[in-house]
Image (cartoon, rainbow, N blue to C red; front, top):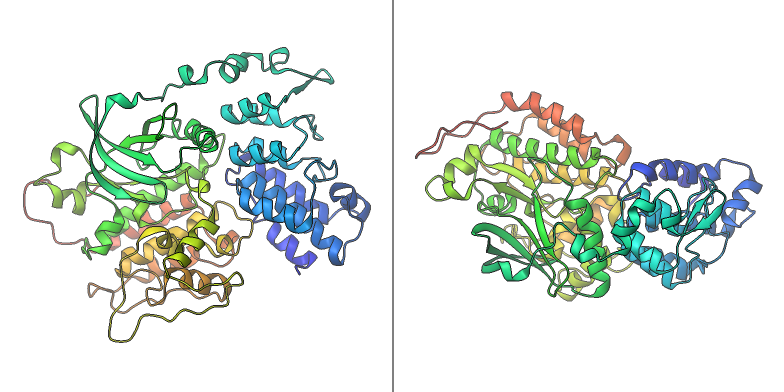
Length: 518
């Protein structure tokens, strides 16, 4: 059982997957534990600050958080375990923000769909006179707004509930009610795509090299083409298509009106950072620091994006691509790897569609872990004499980079990406996967439940010494306390200072200027 002190300590860490509005929300939620007992009871429908009632109040706070974070599996488990009725007018926080408010304001399509089907009141009004529909409109979550309107949702205008077209948001009606397929700028005719060779497989589907209007692109054919997946994908794409940065992979369009669903992105001919590391290609400490800096810049943009912060939640080497012009791929490949290629972050914004539990189940099915629900099983590390296995495949690869609070199914904020970044940096600068002597899930378990972190090898895989300045930065990033981890903007500043102090690898032979992109 978690104490009141634990609740307050964790409160500052609880933010939604997109945090701009929810930062304020959660501070207000946690304040419930600090106000008078009667006020806290009004918010949660419970009047005791001890025992089971306190635990139920904590469960309600967690329900609100996970609804805002888009984790429908966790939300459903809380409702079932604590028998919380989402239709109950007491299932709210101190500001009378209900689960549907939080899910709608954060654009969590799957959670909104579940709450509507569970009978949640779509026209509930919070203390700020907002309905879930107004929150969805204000957050520019068109698909969620459309889903709510189909369920009869309205907005409060001049003291009464009215349809959206009778309110100050009337200009949005055509977008939300009309033929949405025709209005979507990013909808691509699948007949215009010519799939060539499969270049990758992952949790979401298969990635193909393809031609689109005579241009080389990457096409991700998604595994899930259900109606629910369609709505959720469109909701996420509304954010992805507005996200543009030199260090994030660009979404060029999508196929959502026909099956199978597809996402079209720019093509990355050099593969991912994982490809480089698994082949033990030594780019030199300075070049590895450049790739880390590129990644930090991309993440700083995502975390500081307005009006909504974007949390990756699955940052790992396989999701950091090396970009270049397709016209210089051939004989200039070494120059691209060693100096000219730019790191770009991929798969941001789509990660919350795959519940953590699915990854655990798949790992168990593959015989990769015997971890039970309480994390008590202890798989054996690599056998002596066989050497570590560096190949990370499938869903389990994510576990080495998963923040402890995510593994423990606790509320989390954008700092989960900073932890993942630390583990990526460890791999970059040492040449060894973090905690390689353990299975991926066991490594995550030790990090989350026992505070274990990777040991720094001396020397690293390529016979070099990792500088103390790098170690200090990485160790701050993997702090057990999320609030002690630096922001990516601060990480960028430190890496810029560290970069000139690091030795560069020998310039590769062949054409190219060999210049260093910083």
